[in-house]
Image (cartoon, rainbow, N blue to C red; front, side):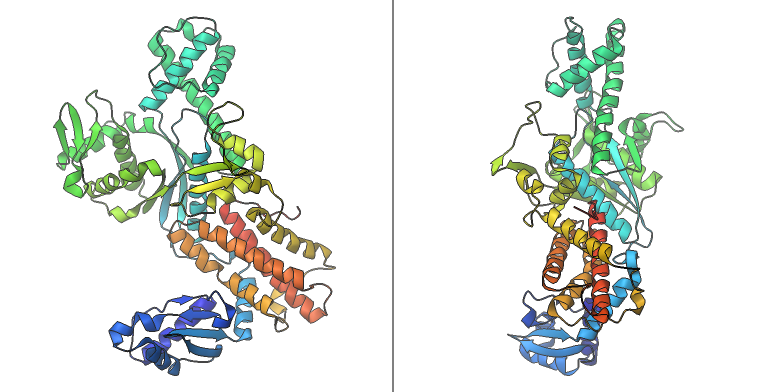
Length: 550
């Protein structure tokens, strides 16, 4: 990588100055007249060396190996601007072509086992737009980690034992009885589910089961309704995820924590372990986790006074299963903004088990606002309720859904513009990126005969500024993939792909490829090939398709 080359040369210069153990920060200037790369290392070291930045920058340049550079200069109060020789830039293109489909991958993770848990909506209805952001983020992060050498397992947690699923089952049974023309045996559940989709599913249930459930004792009928309702929810969820191109390695059911096994259910074993360690207390008829003893601000209820475990109790047992029983080196949970306050207690839970809290990462993402023509869309056209992920997929397609939901940092509120997502113009970023890929595919369709052997192509004819800028941007791809994985920031990938597409469109609009003399045509074909590889890789990591035609 060119950035690594520049860092290494600056580090060598510092070493000659007697400054060791420093990794110089290197950035790409916004304006090309400021060089291919720039460094503020002189400012970072001014206090340590007691030297004004401008003077220190001059001393660094005096010890710099000028071999890869056509020019190196001090700018402003002490910035170091570095201009690479064209042959160094072209050498980066050779490396990209040699790496081929594996360009951008790394061994950073060294095979560490990482679990990414995402989605995990309460199984009480169809996935809505907010959970769309959850699953798209989680899936892209899993892709990025895998590209960096981690062994990744993708998991969806199904909370099939909580109070919400009980209310959902009671609501479904209530409307099922009504669908059969009978009077329900109990009032509609407090805070139950009144949505049109529940009524629709109840009518389906009545058509499929007839009066069978009515003939069962009420408690058993509700259990059977819960089972059938859960199956209906998960069929919908799986269908939506399949349309979005998301596949899980495992679906983990909360009920697994309470199944009897050797030594008793896992949940009971974990509670006994915490009590033996002194982290549980009984108070007001409830069982509490002494989180304050482990750095949290308040203690947390594990088992309510009713005797039912709370959500946090399941989280505790579930994460014990992840780390201790299944032995993941790291776990990443993707949670919505309403879970921000849960992070400290999860870290306290890790300490209670004697685990490093840094092994658990919780990515909190913000809400999504759906807009059409500048107006916010709050309700579903179909049912008058929340907008479902399926409605969004049907209207704009999975590629636009995935790209737009990844286009901003997870910690930023996101606006999803429906009209923009459907445009076939450069204003629509996903169309703009995919169109760059199809343009390259079109070039190769027009090529007569087989492409040249890329390792044998002479790249020296690539002299134009637009060509060299495109190569430099391609060369940045591995660093983007690494940073996006380390910081759980797929938006870096989205922004990178958009910038790469823009540079290619400029090149394509200004220069010919196949109509040039053979040496230049082959060199430009090699540049197109590398761009195609990186665009396809970037889109693939986001879960977006790379079409050959549009």
